[in-house]
Image 1: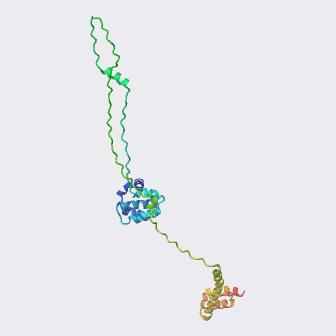
Image 2: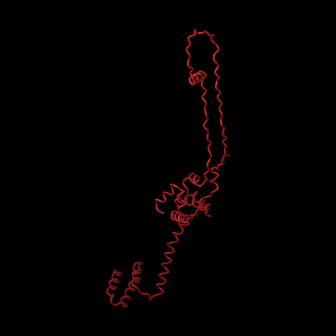
Image 3: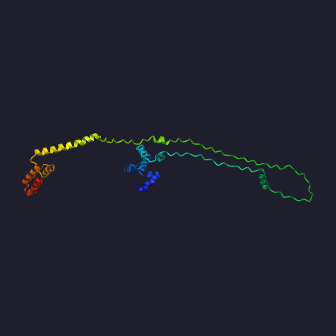
Length: 255
C-alpha cells in the first residue's frame, strides 16, 4: 500500500472496500502501535463479517486516542426524519371601497342619448346602490405529516463498557538483596580467594613435575623467590638455548 492510498483511506473510510482484510492485518502487525491501522482493521472486519471483528474492535478501543471518533465510525448511522412545514397560503382581504372601485372600472360604460325634450327632474334616490360583497372562500388543504417514532440512541458510556481492553500483567521485579546479605557476601569473598590460592599452592606442591615459565613468574609475584629461582634453573636445563635468559631472571630474583 502506498502512502497516498493510505491517506485517502483515512480521509474516506468508505474506500476500505477496495482493500483486503489480510493486507490491513499485515500492516497492523508491522505497526502494532498505530491506532489508525487498528481502527481501520476493526471497520474492515465489520464490513466482511470476520470472526475476529469483536476482538479487533476491543483492541482498537484500547489503542485509540479518541474513543468518541471510534464510536461515530462504528455505531450504525440512523437517519432521523425532520418535520417539513408546508407553506401556508395567505389570503389578503381588501377593503370594500377598493373592491367597489375595481368593479366599477371593469363594468361597461353605457352611452348617453341626447334628447331635445326638457329634462324631467327625477327624484334623486338617496338609497345607495347595494353592491354585493364578494365572498372569498379559502379551501385549505391540511396535510397530515406522520411523525416517526423517536429513535432510542445508546449512550456512549454504556456502549464503551462492552469492550474490555486486554489486561496487561504486571511483571514482578527482582527483590534487591538486603544490605546485610551484601555485606556478608563481601566478607566471604576474601576467604574464598584465600582458599582458592591455598588449593593452587597445594596442587603445585603435589605436582613437582610441573615446570613452566608462567609458574616461575607467578612464584616471583607471590614472593616465593627461591621457588621461582629453582624453576628457572630447571627450565635452563630443559631449554639450553634460553639458558642466558633464565640466568638473567635468576640474577634479578637474587637482587
